[in-house]
Image (cartoon, rainbow, N blue to C red):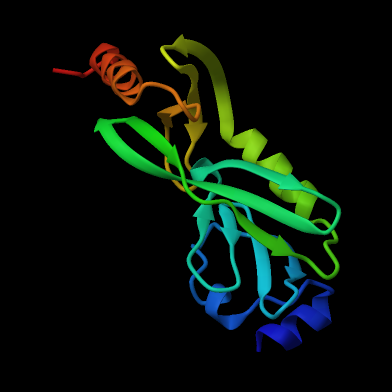
Length: 171
């Protein structure tokens, strides 16, 4: 049914596995076929890879387009306070898109728009970005600390915990 609806209304086709799992308020923004099979679906809430679950905009460290492939670097978040996360970059994933259409621009815009504020902190061995980000489908913001590669992990954790202690409602 999804395919017929899409053709009638001029929308990109959405795989049933994604369509069946979209949140009520989640809208499809763009799609592109991935070389080797599958579809990359961009929604108002995140990116749905060909095999797997949605990666929310607040869960993406960076995304880059190199004229043939979209490279997405997801993060792994460790909760260090009620609304504070310490991030670690996961392995970047490359999606070679046969016809990218609006996908690269849509991904870039939404990753950027998820960031409400950003500040840089210098730490031993490097530094860290302190970000306030909007989480799709939730009220409020999450505070994220994303250290550079090589930054002292103890210093990064101390920064995240110190920020968590200063937030209203902290013990």
